[in-house]
Amino acid sequence: DAADAEKGGYDYFMHKEIHEQPKALRDTMTSRISSENDDIVLDQIKLGKDEMEKINKVYIVACGTAYHAGLIGKFAIEKYARIPVEAEIASEFRYRNPIVDEKTLLIVLSQSGETADTLAAMRLVRERGGRVMAITNVIGSTVSREADDVMYTWAGPEIAVASTKAYTTQLACMYMIAIHLGLLKETITKEYADRIRLALLKAPEEIEYVIKQEERIKEFAYKHFKVEDMFFLGRGLDNYVAMEGSLKMKEISYIHSEAYPAGELKHGTIALVVDDTVIIALCTQEELFEKMLSNIKEVKARGAYIMAIAQEKNKSIEREADEVFYIKDTEDDVASIATVVYLQILAYYLSVARGCDVDKPRNLAKSVTVE
Ligand code: G6P
Image (spheres, rainbow, N blue to C red):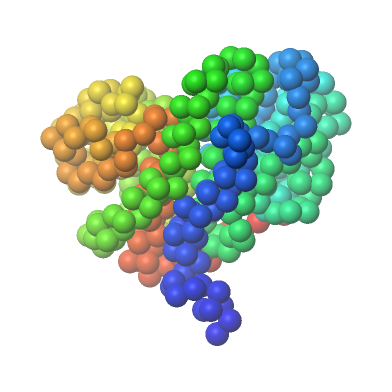
């Protein structure tokens, strides 16, 4: 039927959308790279150097998966543009009387551009004189109409409730904005910006590499589909990717899961680690790699079964983890884009193995337009 035709040979929209990510990312990035000097050109963003000088506070506000992209945006903007950034869930932000004035920049992320709480957060900031920049996937959406600046993710329509290509294209937008702001504020050098941009432009290939490991992830999923609990551990950016991986898992496979900053394990969660507890350890941050190795040793000593994700250069992970999946060597900062694809595929196959309705999980809607 028509729906099957739209799935283009895939069993589920989510599977199709996972596979569309290299293209979605290329579409999102290449239109913003100057053919003259390869610089990032964000024509849509009218916020200029003078206005940026005035900004003393940035909030990134969103819901669900978009919020997880916002956390990574916070990391990148603080690192490159040296402005304090708070990332917050829209339904929390709107009810806590946040400090907002004309020196505030709000960045909202919303695939649909129609999420009620995100819209309310935007309106609150605009009423108090702040400036709003929106990252959305839908042209003409309410968010796109009400924002001062709009940057589109060119992901194409996303049908599956669980967001995949919208998230990775949101990450690309967040990095481009962070580099752009860093250059505007002169807090990063042109050379540094070039380095990150080049790494970013390789993300589509890195995702293709991850997708090639699909059979192995599927095997892992079919081996472990009966688990009822799972933990995702990471440090730094990996902690934020862990949050997204855990959300995906809950949404479509109904496996209870928790994401935890690995360094915080000792303060509670490790009490839940017993024989055969499945732990997904994200170890893609070169700078934090040794720290992750010690955390893995700690949970292994309690009997956990560990699946790790690391950059190819860090082969020593094989001594500690039970199963290792690699991403291609890259800059730590942009490793998240490829890493999350493993977690999307893992959630997908666990959902299929458990006989769940992958594209339409129970109780969930694609877009939450009421509170
Ligand atoms: C719902 C969807 C999620 C999405 C969130 C925010 O919960 O199921 O996939 O991340 O809303 O949606 P938005 O359209 O604002 O990105």
